[in-house]
Length: 364
Image (cartoon, rainbow, N blue to C red):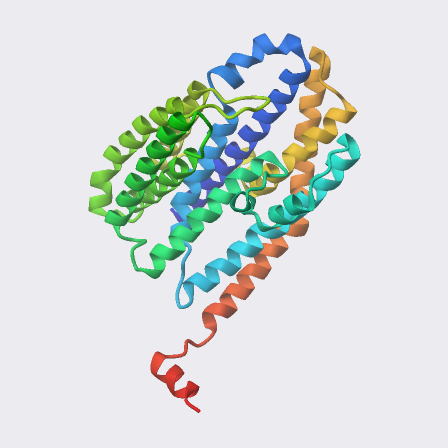
C-alpha cells in the first residue's frame, strides 16, 4: 500500500508539472499567433486554466505529505535541513540560468535588490517581484512549512480540530482580504490564505483516509464542500491583477474544482497514473522551475506564428524541458536530496541535552 501511495502521488506530481508547462506554452503561442487565439483561448484562458489546475494539485499533495514529514527525535531540525537541500539548490540554479538567459535573449536586467531578494525564495516579503513568474507558489509552500513547524512545536499538527480551524481561518482571511480589495479597488493577495486552506484540507484528507481518524472523516466532506463554495466567492470578489494573460474567475474556479476532484478520485480509488506521469513526477520540481526558461529560449529558435511553427515550438519546449529537468534532477536534485537526508539523519542521532543537565552545564 505504501508503494501504491507513493506512485499515485508521483503520478499526480507529473500531471501537475506537465499541466503548468502546457498552459505557459499555449499562452506563448496565443500571444504570438493571432490565428490560434480563437481556437485555444476558451480552453486555456476563458474557461479553464491548466496552470492553476497543476498548482492546485501541487498544493493538495504538499498538504497530504508535508505534515507527516516531521520525525523524532529532532523533527523540526531534520525537516528544515532536508527541505532546504530539497528545494534551494535547483531553485538557485534556475534563478541563475534565468538571469543569464533573459539578459542574453531579451536584454532584460534586474535591480540588485530584486536579485538578492529572489535568492531567499521569499522575495514577496521584501516587496520584490519574482524573476520567474512560477516562483510565487514557492513562497506559499514555505509559509505552509512554517505553519506546520509551528503547529508541530505546539503539539497541534495532528489535532483534527486544529486542521479544521486552520481551514476556517484561511477561508475567512481570504474573504476578508477580497473584501478589502473591493473597497480599495486594487489587487490584494486573497489567494494566499485560500491556498493555505487548501493545503490544510489535503492534510485533513490524509488524516481521514490513511490515518483513519474518525473525526477527520466526519468533517472532511463538509470542509471540502465549504472550500469549494468559498473559493469562487473569493475569485469573483477580487479585482483582477493586470497581466499579459489575466486569469478569469471562471477559469480559476474550474481549474481548482477539477484538481480537487482528480485528487479525491485518485486517492480514494488508489488509481496510479501511467508510467510516463510517474517518471515526470520524479522530475516535476525541475520541470516546474525550468520550463519558463526553456519556453523563452525555444521561442527565439522557432518563434510561433503559424500552425506548423506552433506545433514545432510546442514539441521543442517539451523535449527541451524534459531534457533539462532530467539533467538537473540527476546532477543537482538527487545529490541534494541525498545530502539533506544524510544531514537530517545525523541531526536525528545527535543526543538531546536534558534541561536539568543543560542548566548544570551553564553554571560556572
